[in-house]
Length: 311
Ligand code: FO1
Image (tube, rainbow, N blue to C red; front, top):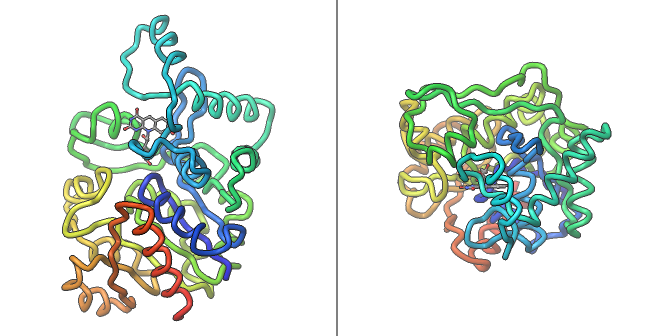
């Protein structure tokens, strides 16, 4: 069974790690959000591509869910001594190797797609990893304190400012990266990972042609809720939904995807929302979606695969 996943950062990576253990990794293609990308110290940083790659390689810092395991920060400290800036975005010494390589290859004219493939092969990752687009489309968060790059909002300001709006810069002029549309239309199942619907999956769906491909694909489109019991397990999904006047619930996230979803997997804690979601024409499966360890990741991945096989 050919599977394509739409993914953001940490939550998605956990499920993807389960999936690569539950089925043949070569059958999985992952379309990754690049709206979080940011330039720092002249380097092109692509956090979600790196989080997915490092996690699937078993190399991620397990406590943080991003960066490399046992990394050190000597280079960053040296840079900040010259720069005089505040340390708010932690780039590890070995992680910097990835950013230097990516930046060097971009300057030589390689595409983000080609570079992502080189990096995942170097880490022996067998799933295909595709950026959503090859052109920069940074996410701007409009807040009561002004406009912030997504990383400034999330990491520097710890998601404290109130969100008024979200803008995906240059998105109308962006094209899906090579292989993205084929991965959606040629799959047997497309999985929308439990990522932030507004700033992780939202940018992928906003790339011209992607949402339409999901609407017409013969693949079963299966979403996994990132909201459990009225809160997000990781990151500011709950706060952002609420700031933007939306209900913080699994059902609300399903509504954001209702034009593309066939099946939605919600947590046992949210079982009461089942009928509300079914009434919108979406099949619902109830599972333990809280991936607290390797066994839970594998169990949820098997649940997702069972939902794919049932359609
Ligand atoms: N997240 C943080 O909360 N603090 C950091 O200092 C930080 C550094 C960082 C460096 C490289 C990288 O690939 C990711 C990093 N992240 C950091 C994670 C990142 O900000 C977000 O979690 C993702 O963009 C959302 O998926």
